[in-house]
Amino acid sequence: MSEAVRAEEKIVGQIEQAAERLRRVREETARVIYGQDEVVELALVAVLAGGHALLVGVPGLAKTLLVNTLGTVLGLDAGRIQFTPDLMPADITGSEVMEEDEHGRRHFRFIPGPVCCQLLMADEINRASPRTQSALLQAMQERFVTVAGERHDLPRPFHVLATQNPLEQEGTYPLPEAQLDRFLLEIDVDYPDREAEARMLIVTTGEDEASASRVLDAAELMRIQHLVRLMPVGEKLAETILDVVRAARPGQAEADDFINEAVAWGPGPRAGQALMLGARARALLHGRLAPSVDDVAALLDPVLRHRMALTFSARADGVRLADVIGRLKERMA
Image (cartoon, rainbow, N blue to C red):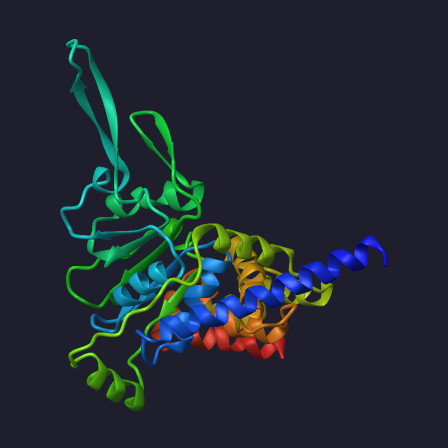
């Protein structure tokens, strides 16, 4: 047996083992989160792909509970920041304080902020000012913070799962485009169906409260994240991802007249990277050895919706981003 065949069989075995572990992760999460299977799947896709996710929905839809549950199930050290209008950047990154030892010598000591954790819940992120929101930028992209000119590395792995209220609500600020692009996925959290809400009504008001148990730890999660990057992607699928991302940009040769007229600016290269990694992670979650076009189509909305903007005339005509993304899906078929 050749080395290449043995290596391939080893990866196949690792993928099958990881898929079984992830099945248990979803089962444990479902013990606490009802009627949000797609939301849970997309949140796991973001984490497995090594990225961050933005959960958007009205209050009371278990967004915060989902983040807490994932921290427990994945075995990650979780932190939480409640974003408010008076929150300052130092409240996120940490700060230096002056201390004096027993000999009277003074020195500065760094006190880590809540961002120094493995799974950060940024609760109601759009309640804070844009300046404070931007304090997360370096941490999300570079995995370290700089305080007083000193670099402080964040724990590994590091993921931000932020919750956001709809912008129409009072007291919210839109996130800067540069920060939105750092989120691998934007996940819409909608109301549960009647059956799930009925179950939730009974279970959550009883004497015993449901809880989830740990399935993974940080080291095992990082091994699975590395495995996601080893999953093979066919040349045809890579071309499909490239085509659909470029077709969403006005002025590109791949864009049609509708895109050129309706889209003010389109997704950058990070969108293609998010589709590539996300499709691999979704395939692993479903126990498959390689991603398919269906995985790309399923992730098109959460990958693109926060990386595009409509023109004024398109908004005036009632065009929605969902219409634009739907047209891109049709081109993929």
